[in-house]
Image 1 (tube, one colour):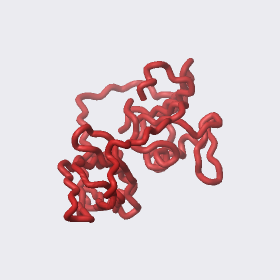
Image 2 (cartoon, one colour):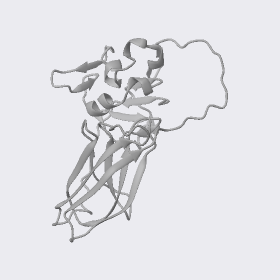
Image 3 (cartoon, one colour):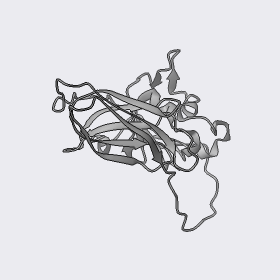
Length: 220
């Protein structure tokens, strides 16, 4: 289960990665992401391509409803692929050598394994309230809200007065559509509305809305 989900009201800036651009950006990488146990497809899994030499991000995409994905217009070079899905162990496919001899690289079925959680002990405590207000944040205890079970993180937030979703599906937090999403303290591969629609409410323990983040989040 996800320990917590942080949403920060900050402006996101994306720097163009010019070091890996080449004139022959015509390679295609494709594959299908499936569950290793049930062989069922994993829709909307996150696939990101990174440079082998310095792990810099090259491009990324979400798998479709059929678990299939395609990374197009990739330049020749040496890369590795990172495949992640909530509740599953992240998988890495290393040493992808995209040379001039081939234009398409079909990785076939990519198997992901569900994350195993080891419980060393149990403690009986009082139930949490559904929401907690702190000086610097608002905590939504999703596990206490049975109405959103089976939904997504977006379903949880739509009930919050500080969150608005326009007819196009864009999410606004206190009037801004620019915010960062962290899962267990780490930036999520997707951001914005797409990320909130992918994360299952069943996997969330709580969501923290931080509209005035401290300096410790500057690096994020």
